[in-house]
Amino acid sequence: MLLDRIALFVNVAKHQNLAKTARGMHVSSSSVSQRLKSLERDFGVKLYKRNKTGIELTNEGRLLLTTASQVLNQLDTLRKTLNPDSEKPVQRLSVGGTYNTSAKYLPSAIATFQKIHPEIQVTFLTSHSRAVENWIRDGELDIAIVQSPSESCIAELYTEYFAKDNLAFFACPGHPLTKKQKISLEDLANTPLIVRAGGTGATQRILTLLKSRSFNLNVALRCASPDAVKAAVRRKMGVGILFHNLIEDDIRRKELKILRVPGLPRMSGNSYIVYDKTKPLKHPAAEFLAILHDMKSRQKNPIVVRNLTGTDQS
Image 1 (cartoon, rainbow, N blue to C red):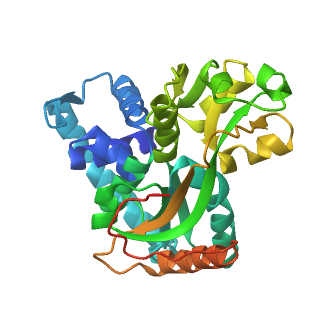
Image 2: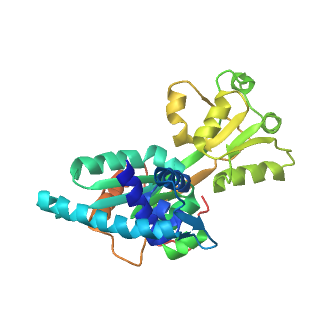
Image 3: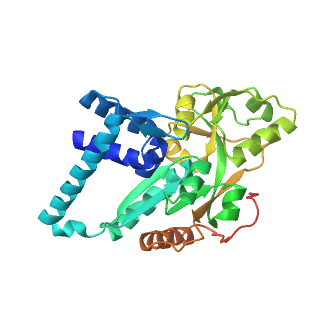
């Protein structure tokens, strides 16, 4: 709708930065840019131009900002007059996680939370660990679960052990290695490997270990997400490496198959609950934390590690 694009323009003009506006709205910068271009086409004028720090408005953009702000304020006043209950503040909870934790733990925790608190609006964001950590620092997330957090995260944010998961090699059912009774390290070294770009600490450790044993690895593809790794494996492009919780449903459906490599030690990664320790948790986040604690207590052999001072060595 035109009104939605105008409201977006006012928001961008307030921040004078497309990326900052996108982060605040939990959408991509390209989405914001496309909607603003559509608004410019609606009016047939250029509303802003980019500079080194963000954007600056054109004369037409400043005129639209002044008029649009007045119109939006009038609409807000009308809404409150017609529906006084709309003035009641809406409680919100922003939850985030890295790919592994978002696949296994967070959907269940969010579903439980929404059954208890249907009146609270929940936002759920997923990305790699550095992005999730920055969202916590910037206040865009109230609470998150991060796998293998960085040293700066451990030093600056509150971190509490949540769960452990093991790294797994896997292939599509028709792959030649799935037919072998015993897979050797030589077999693995001679097979194209598919990993996540950037990878996890455990993935890098297993690759480093194989290199230390003089195996020339063939990392054929580095993918942006776990789903992309699984898609490449399904297309028989090679053997994938991911944490087990990301592929357990695929294994259950017999779409993928775990490969057992006796010559390799078990590699695992720990996940941690993360939030800003410099300010108290808001009520919704504290309620969500209680749900995570309950989930952790029902895991086998739970370990509690609070306020870590070193890197994850698991």
